[in-house]
Length: 143
Image 1 (tube, rainbow, N blue to C red):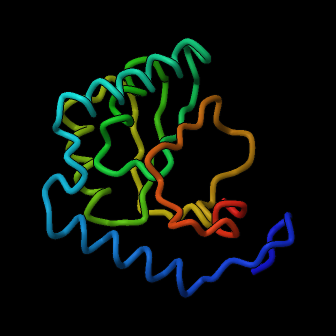
Image 2: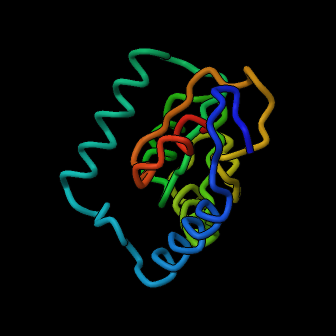
């Protein structure tokens, strides 16, 4: 698949990446040790920086939301939050987290960063952190 930058993305590698992450989330409740104090502070710092840049976004997007730590923090100052990950197990856990902590409408879905399917220019704030590209710069350029 050619991108606007002219790079070619290996779709088979992307599918394998998706399967690998789904297995990781199925095998561990907290595969990235997000429950640690350092990670809670890190996500809070990211949310605080986003809030300074965009104090009251109408719509925020959390790309590759993982377990939803940043998603719920974005909900503290956004009217609506959209979040996605391509691992269904991660999405389910994010939904559960959001049910407990949500202060606004949160829509969490299984989507792929290769083609998430959102309309252009509908988000005031887009957060993308902790996404592993495995050094695949063609993939990263496409996303």
